[in-house]
Length: 90
Image (tube, rainbow, N blue to C red; front, side, top):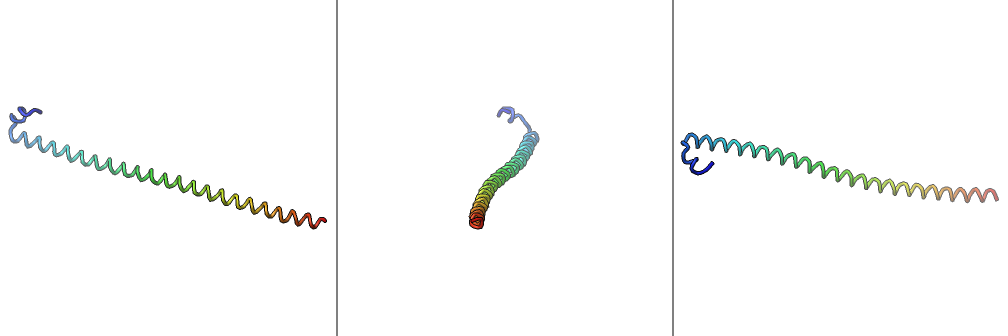
């Protein structure tokens, strides 16, 4: 609306325009807040998924280390009892 058109409006019409603009501004603020909340929720979800992925990788390393230790233990037991079996056969 141009300045000329605004000047032709009555006070009641101007007040009505002002109220309408205020309502629009409040609605936009509410929508912005909802959008910010949704964004924050998604950000938290992304952070959690990143943490879960990191935890899964760390667990995989733990399991790999445990498997390597178990394999080493079995190898040593086989060596020990294999050597003991060879001695008992001689």
